[in-house]
Image (cartoon, rainbow, N blue to C red):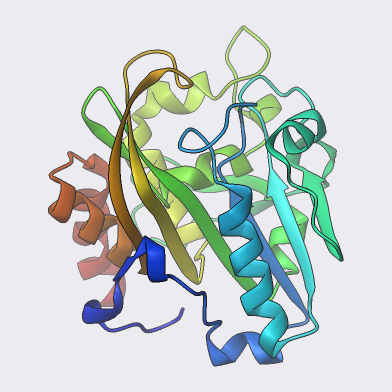
Length: 251
């Protein structure tokens, strides 16, 4: 994982330029996970301008393959959403979770909180550098940030109960525990929270209030989500679970 000092976590959105970490210069494949599960513009989803900034920054130091990977809650196709959001970038491959080959990956925690294994797209495991980039969103007062953004990498077909699609089986286990397990199982290198605006929602993930905020948070995903939560004043339950698990895992 990239080590970024805490003072470097927050940037003014108006001045933000993505400077790719030097390790990307050695990567052959960089995977970006946007928040793009719905055909609604920023701040519901990751803005195309943010993705353009990341791609440009990567291209400054590397000629690596760049992939965008996303899935939808109901298991429907993601390509129409990419098109609706304006995700059209030269020399970038767009992928749909549902079209990938899945592999079962062990949770490295000695005592998993909810999930001892996860089914994940194999393209994640074959990528050298992983970036998760999400808007600053809250749902019923709870933060949905860069680590929560990883949920839609899981094939909904593997994690539904009686109704096809969605991740209801995971929510039944306690979604904060699942997200904490996922953090350790899929160690993304970089987390970005696009906080030019703040989206405040309730039940409908595409409808809510929007407030100007003017910031970009960038760093290791846990550190970024913690910084956002403390700065904005959000309840982000999976962070407490990750912190506790880190103590045991690193010991």
